[in-house]
Length: 326
Ligand SMILES: [Zn+2]
Image 1 (cartoon, rainbow, N blue to C red):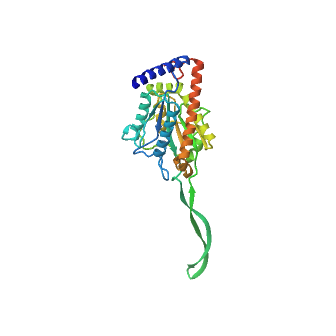
Image 2 (image 1 turned 90 degrees about the horizontal axis):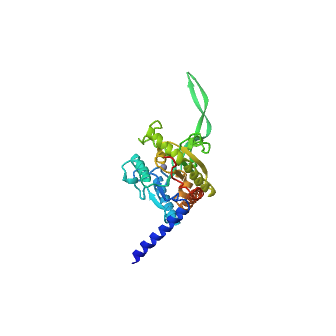
Image 3 (image 1 turned 120 degrees about the horizontal axis):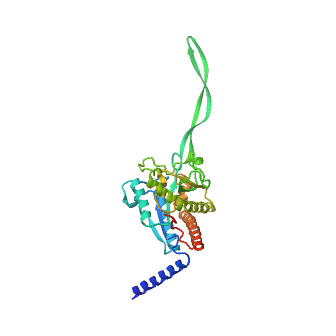
């Protein structure tokens, strides 16, 4: 009886929601969100002093999911992984990347959010460097033939100097569609200290723009999802900034590390929530308070993005996410 009531109630409720949706322009723009914690299993990602990128990304991703589920119980949430494994238990990074994209596409997601940590420098935390700190003049006696004379030389003093790994801040990536987009700051500016997602061991091939199938897919992405990806990426960075984090900006790349972004048929972003190579940020990202703040920032950005799409969908009386001409 109780079950029957629940079923009837659910039907009535969903009927009401459908009716409301019909009144407000059809399908809700954000029904399914894919959360993709970076790396996992045999791929720990960037190493910190006491944690790995894979661990931190997973912890923050799960908390983000909890927050989204509480705020919008009707939202369908899909994780690419919920434990310390490569997504889909795949044997290598490339297979796992493809699995992430396939899962997102098969679930008909409206938004794809990858969570990663950044890394820079020689070593997490810092490193010792030998530096000259002074020179002491010394004399020695030199023999030349039968003559002896004194010669001055310098003894250099070295010290092992601790170099702190100071690079910090957050950045959000979108797939590079148009390198000349003036909204996006160039990666080049920070190239010196950047190590990030460059993955030389990957055999994954990047999409070939001259391949007709790839061309169509990239065009669809460009027309339908690129602007939206930029919009939410901007919002994420704005929220981080308002929390006092260092804003390294919205950036575009088209390397293997963010291949998964363009392979998903939906707006997609990759958030570097902080530098695991910076002790202060590693501690922050591992702390309850830090994780709560990061989650709150990302959640607020998603909410602003969702509100914006819903407002637009209401005013246009059209489904917001449906491509118009494909
Ligand atoms: Zn990563």
